[in-house]
Length: 198
Image (cartoon, rainbow, N blue to C red):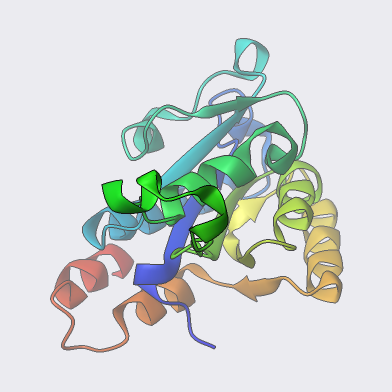
């Protein structure tokens, strides 16, 4: 099944100033995360940023900081354990009308999340990305953007991808996400997104 922009949310995990310089292929990962954020903004895909212990690891790199609202600050390696599931459900679930709110709870229909496809980029792939994805997979369709994730070592990064694939996460690339969001060269943002790739 292809990724739909209207059903997606982008999560950028711990792309923080003090972590990035130590990461394998960090500059390339940052460039791809930025492409995802720019395209997400164009296509009105909600963006959530997490920060692991920012007092010690710094805040989200400035290039990405302006693309999301207030970061989700966490101490757990899995953002799913520190409020990410609730945040994604709140963003993706349509708000109830005043009439629905006034109905007794037992008569109200449960509302389904309209944005159940979570696109994940960030670091470190074998720690916070892996544990967050594992925590989200029961509730969401999770797509890990392999060229927008990294670890300090290539081996740790690749081991994370092996495990995530075995667990059922979808492994994708930045261009796969962008072109699936577009679906067609006739999309109103095709030329703008194409410029991000060139």
